[in-house]
Image (tube, rainbow, N blue to C red; front, top):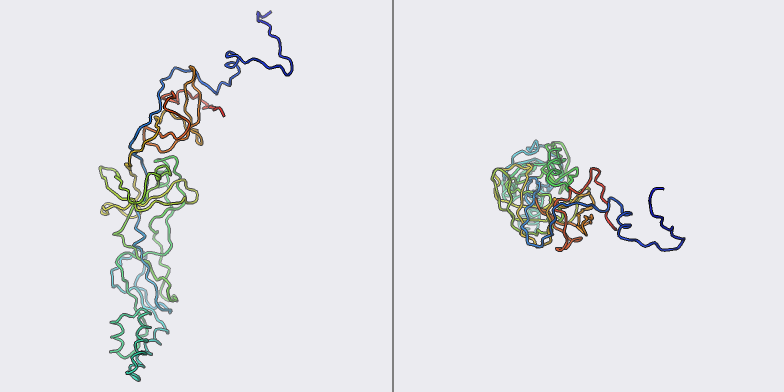
Length: 371
């Protein structure tokens, strides 16, 4: 009635011959695409790497010092009142009343007055005062004064700014958005290693301190660095001592040296930090966000244009031309530049792929690759 040839139905257990026409008819429509788009071949070549990164200017933690209390007692006077107060070397920062220190002073004066020939005990008493923070000048003044002082003054041995201990700054929305816009693989977590926020100091007048307790911390702002967030593929090309050219924008370029590559991932982060030392410290403030362009050494690998790859989130897809149709194939990618992607597995230089893979994706982005 309909003008069709009758074909005998296969009996149970009988194999059906799969012809080319039948294979094309039963193939899922999302497994291949018929198109006449331009094709290219992957290129195996040496390509210089230029990548973008987001970083924060921070102080060098190797130049953060602590000023501890050598004796236990009560703080009678605190000359450092607030965080980020400027300190100079030799400036008095606190006065401490310490019964233990008063006893040690009286012991030295007693020995000098009643047993001046016993140099061993006198030297031992002086050494005890030295361990408590007395300098040779202070000991000489004590001997001349012949009277124990009730308070002991603590002086700063460093230049810098007073900061609170163990303080962190949460990443602002601007920093998070900047990090995400630079590289979609980067997701900022809740905190970053940035300068402390403006908070009150932990030690106040009237507080009791114990020997070894930190009174304040001092940071030297002349020693600063940039901490950059880079993908793991980029950090594999870096090692300590490598020289980088960092474009900080507005024509401002700096030659820097990699000081440290973080060997582990922080919680909820899929990027690593590198520390970069640079010489120009005049145009930057601690905590400043910087967007950098880094020129790395050339890498020899298999490369494809960025537009020839479809990013499905977890998988990367290219369309390989086979017998007039394009079949989606998973590939593994590595480092990327503005225009090129490194291909680790899934392609060969003899494969022909669609030059622009996005022309082969329908409006619903249905792509099914063969297992």
